[in-house]
Amino acid sequence: MKQQLEKIESLAKEEILSCDDIKGLDSLRVKYLGKKGEITSILKQMGKLSAEERPIIGQLANKVREDIENTISEKLKALKQIEQDNAIKNETIDITLPGKTKQIGKLHPLTIVANEIKEIFIGMGYSIADGPEVEYDYYNFEALNLPPDHPARDTQDTFYITDNILLRTQTSSVQVHVMENQKPPIRVISPGRVYRSDAVDATHSPLFNQIEGLVVDKGITMADLKGTLETLMRRLYGDDYKIRLRPHHFPFTEPSAEVDVMCFNCQGKGCRVCKNEGYIEVLGAGMVHPKVLEGCGIDSEIYSGFAFGLGLERIVMRRYNINDMRLLYENDLRFLEQF
Ligand code: PHE
Image (cartoon, rainbow, N blue to C red; front, side, top):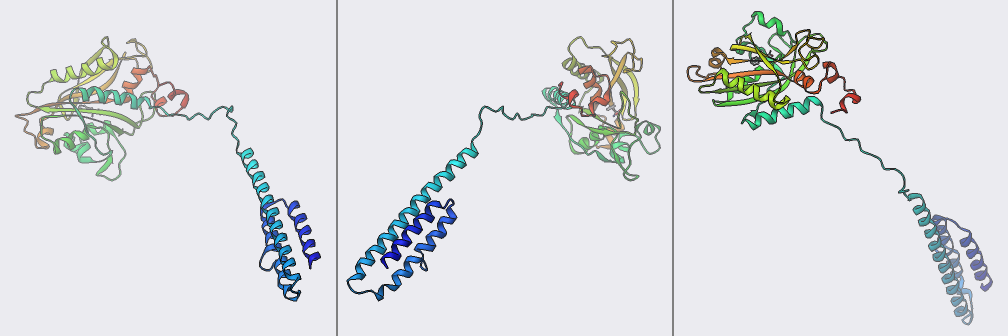
């Protein structure tokens, strides 16, 4: 029995020392020290021994068990150390490598200028109104004094969802929403997308942006309109800007005007951008038609107002000397990164 134990010990040590993974070590522990392990099976035979032999063999068995346990735990420690060293080696970061840069986006020029215009008007006490892009015919045309079959509808052909619902052709539709919901004094601007079935060229797109303005109060005159637009243009372009007002017709304003700014591309000489006019029309404006006020429940004997609608793209193009409107929609980063 003594020999058996000694043999087990030397075999176990040999196996443990040559074992090189933690799992294998675990099964060696079971093999030698477990309930059904080799030492236990020897101890089971202790009954056959004489009274003198028993304590000696018992002692030896305990010593062998302890030795094997110690060998296992030392080996385990060594294996764990190797594992940790490997982990550290594998997880090492080379801090001399160049960092990954995050690409931060930029505001689109249309957004930059829209924000500027909002700031200018907020500074003059206006608030911002919003309205739907998918609109009823009533708000886009009829309430703006453009009944069905009115010839001016032809110049604003758009995309129809049903006979009665369309993509709005102008932010003027928001004028009606505001006046239906708010009593004077009213001072709002309303930026947003509008749609027309126009062919794409250097100055036209079927989707573009407008900013509508509406002021309704007692004693509002054309002088207020002109002063407001001059203030806007000076703040946008500087004091030496040139604009011109031309008499015009809109069904929902009376009198009406179109406002032009001098062409940035040719300085008034005439070119492709301004279609040889020397000026570019940037907005339509006028005094709110009494019929429109009355239709929204506002007494036109007491109140008057002005409205204007400006084309954001044209303002942006003049601002940054962009000579083709398509650049604003193509999302070419080489273009957009310049702002
Ligand atoms: N809605 C008009 C257009 O799109 C512009 C406009 C707005 C004219 C407000 C007068 C008053 O052409």
